[in-house]
Image (cartoon, rainbow, N blue to C red):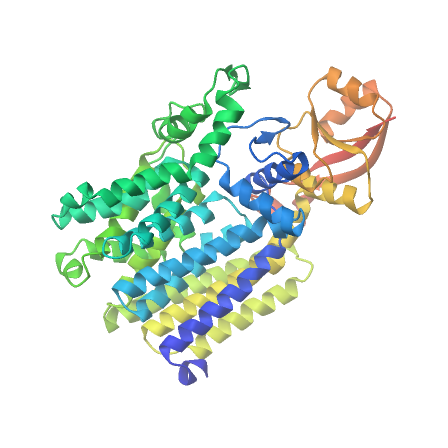
Length: 549
């Protein structure tokens, strides 16, 4: 058995290799709405327009996110062609880079065992598994923030090149999400210097050089915003003119969301990320929360290197900022999962045998609940090969308990990893391929490509056709009123994608040719009626591809 033949160190390395290998299956899944498909369509239009400075959505200027994720995806499209695989590849590779830096930082201050465990915890956390398929900016952020922290930490004692490298990765993080990401990067160091009475470190020239380098490295982003918006005050953005892209980047997109004074608003809940972490960090969330409580004990902190402060304070301050923010989404928390992973691993390697037995019981309960839940979903949804999905869940469950026995840290880590292997197989091979068929825009776009339709694709009175935007074989036009329709009527080579509610209106004015009907469901908001195969037709909407004769 693996548990007998492999040392603990070798066992963890094998598990990491298997986790990475299975993660590659996520690249075969299609792009998911809304955010993933929106970002993919923006990158696609960069290539079609050969315009790497301006961001467009629905053919209009778009001001929300910085450019780097779109540049990376567009570069991948240039190399591999426009596809879901090419869109996801940069995020996947950079996430692996972040895992490497997570390992390096942990190994430098603790030991290889703790570093391997922290890498496994990160790779197997539920929201990391989800983000491998539903690619958003936070996967990039987690990697760039971890890399920046590693190099700035090395720069405290070693070569000036680490200042350059740290500033480069910090700038990459800024060009993914904005300047708020400097908080998880720098706040850990500032609190560490304050607690260890080294605040004079802030006066050293190298840190001011680091800030200067960040500003230099983000000049491509600043230039792009200036060219698209600040040079054109006549443009209408957020319903008003004279909008500054630079002001939005430095203030409204960050502090405006935090204080709810910017153009994009939300409703904050102080407990939101507390309960989000419970499911997003599975199967490690219980261990993590107990590890956090343990950090409040003076004795527990005293046995850890002082540099641990950099990690827990970075996570704590960022978590507080997220919690007090008025704009909250579950995937934001992914940014500090590397810190969560280190905190959990540090606690796990120090727990007593009695607590190991307790956590094994908790883990077994979590394991049972997750497997039963996924098995129930497979049966109720009736995946095309749901028997194979059940078989994989059964094999991984039996393997976890046969291969890894006894009350030990190795058993806890290995069973958690095997559970995540089962979840990944379930998600990437069965669940996502099945539910994505109800992403009608994607199906319509792929139908156009499969039938080699050369017509110009258009959307009528629907603003969220992001997957159609990406999968249609050309840049998509958006039609909002009769004037747009009249213009389209004279262009014989136009095919319109529209919701079923708009068909009566179109039929009353034009002679329509219906090309194809597609089923639609908002797949990121799953409900029981959709999961149950018998009741699914009652909650489906329909979209159509039509031509005006």
